[in-house]
Amino acid sequence: MCGIVAYIGKKEAYPILVKGLKRLEYRGYDSAGVALLNGSLNVHKKEGKVKDLEDFVVNLNTSGNMGIGHTRWATHGVPCDRNAHPHTSNSGNLAIIHNGIIENYAAIKEELSQRGYSFTSDTDTEVMLNLIEDIQQEEKCVIEEAVRIALNEVIGAYAIVLIDKREPNKLIAARKGSPLVIGIGKEEFYVASDASPIIEYTNNVVYLNDEELAILNRDGGLEIKTLGNISKSPYIQKLEMDLEKIEKGGYEHFMLKEIFEQPQVIQDCMRGRMNADQGWIKLGGVNEFSNRINNAKRIIITACGTSWHSGLIGEYLIEELARVPVEVEYASEFRYRNPIVTEKDVILAISQSGETADTLAAIQFAKERQALIYGICNVIGSSIARESHAGSYTHAGPEIGVASTKAFSVQVTILTLMALQLAQSKGTISQSRLRQILFELEQVPEKVKQALALDNVIKEIAVKYHQAKNFLYLGRGLSFPIALEGALKLKEISYIHAEGYPAAEMKHGPIALIDENMPVVFIATNKSAHEKIVSNIQEVKARKGKVIAIVLPGDTTIKKLADDVIEIPETDELLSPLVSIVPLQLLSYHIALLRGCNVDQPRNLAKSVTVE
Ligand code: G6P
Image 1 (cartoon, rainbow, N blue to C red):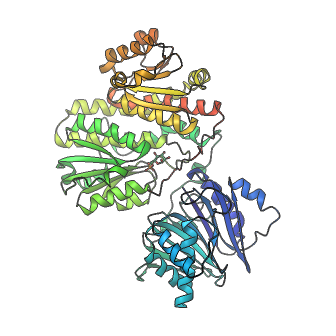
Image 2 (cartoon, rainbow, N blue to C red; image 1 turned 60 degrees about the vertical axis):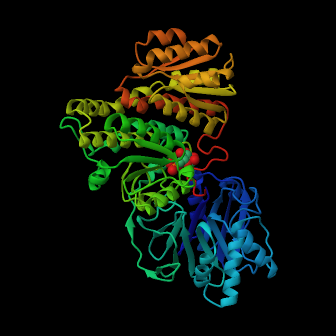
Image 3 (cartoon, rainbow, N blue to C red; image 1 turned 135 degrees about the horizontal axis):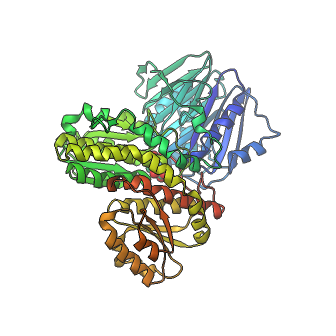
C-alpha cells in the first residue's frame, strides 16, 4: 500500500525522500511523487516506479531542506501522473501525501465544488486537502488547527503529511488507522509509513497513535495533540532494527533471501521460549493472561492472506494438543457478520505487518465485546501489537518480499509453542510427548536447511512446469493449509491460476479440471494419511494429470507413481508444515522467475493492506 516519507531539517530533502521511497517499494505501488519547499513549492510525480520519477526530475528543481514523498497504490482513480501524490490545494499553498481512504469524500467534494473548488485528480486525498484549505480560509487559523478541524470531519483511515508553503518551518503529520513513525534526529525530523526509511539516520522514534496530530518544527520542537485538541508528550522509543537486515545481502531477490533466512528466524523465534531437556515452554504473553487463556471456552483466530493459513495450522494444533475448540475467521468476514463474541473468548490476531486494516478492525470489534486479544505480529510497535492485551512477537526481522514466507514459518512456530503450552497447562499432553515434540522442534531449523538444499532439484521441476496455465495443490490434515499456502504463493508471484484443496475434496469438483496439462502438487508428508493420499494420486494419474509429490524419505510407493518427487526430511507429523512449505515457496519463486515476473513486487499486490 501507499508509502510515506517526509523530512524537515538542514539536509537536502530530495535524496532522503527518494532513498526512503525505495525502501518502501516492497509495500506495492503504481506511481511516485515528491514535493519540495525551497521558497517555491515544487511538486514532481510520475506513474511507474521510483526510478521513473528519478529519470523524470533529472533537469528539474529538487532542492529544498523540507519535503514530502509518496508511493501510491491506487484506490480512488486509476494509476497515472495526475492521480499520483503529492496533491496541491487550489491556492497552491498546501501539499499533502496520504495513505488510506476517505469514505465521505464524495459528499465533501460536492460541497467544495459548489463553493468554487476545482479538482485535478480523481482522488479522495485532493478533496481532503481542499477541505483543509477551505477551513483555514474560513476560520483564519494556523494550518495545524485547520488540519485538526478537517480530520474531525472526514470519515475513514489516513496517515498524512502536509506542507504549507507559507510556513516553511513546520511539517504537519496525522494518523488514524494507517501507521506513521516519526524519526527524531538533531534538529531534524523524518516521517515514514514504517521505520525502514528512517533507520539509517536515527534510532529514536515516536509512533503516532490513532487520532493524533504532530507538528514538527524545524528548530527540533515536536508537538503532539489529539484530534480533540489535547496535548500529549511524545513517547520516544529506541528502534532495534538492523539496516543490514533490510537489504538483500547478496541474494537476487528479497523473497529468496527471506526463504533462506527461515532456519535462522525459526531458531530466533524459539529462543528463550522453550527448553526440550527440561520440558518447559514460556510464551510471556500467555503467562501474563494464563487464567483467561486456559479457561477460554473457545479460541477464535482471525487474520488475512498467508497469516490466515498459519491460523488454520494453529487450529489443527490447538485442537489436537490442547483440546480447545478453535475457529479460524477471515478478518474481513468476521468483523462484518455480527459474530457472537463474549468475554469468555480469546482472539488470536495473526499479522506479519500488524497493520492489516481488516485484522485491526476485527480485534477492535472483539475488544469492545470484552474478549481477550492476543496478537501474533512480526512488526514491533505495530498497530495490532499495540491494540492487543497480550501477545508474542515472531521476531523474523523485516519481511520485504510482498509474498510472505519467513513470517509464515515463525507464525506457525509461535502457534506450535502456544498449543503445547496450553496443552501442558490443561494437562492434555503427557510430559514425555511434550518433550518429544520439543526435541523435534529444536531440530526443525536444521531440517529446513536440508529442504533448502533441494533448491536445484526444485529449479528443474520449475523449468518443466513453468508454462502451465493452472496448478492444483492437495494435502490432508496439516498438509491442507500448506496446499492453500503453496497455491497462494504461486498465484501471487507467477500469476498462474492455482488452487489449494483438501485432497479428498478433489473428487467433489476439481477432478473435472484434470487432464494431461494439469500439474497437481501433493503434500504427502503426513504418514497418518499416507494410504489415502496414495489413492488420490492414483485418481489424478488415471486422468493423465502430472503429479509433483512432496514426500518423506523412503516413500517408494509415491515415488513410483509421481512424475516428480521432492524428498524432504521427516519430522514429527505435527511439525511437518514447517518443513513442507519450503519446497513450495522455492517452486513458486523459480516458476515466477522463469516467467519473467517481478518476484518481490508482484502486480496489484501490497505488502501491508491498510485499507479495507
Ligand atoms: C497482504 C500481503 C500478504 C499477507 C496479507 C496479510 O495481502 O500481500 O502477503 O499475507 O496481506 O498481511 P499481514 O501483515 O496481516 O500478515
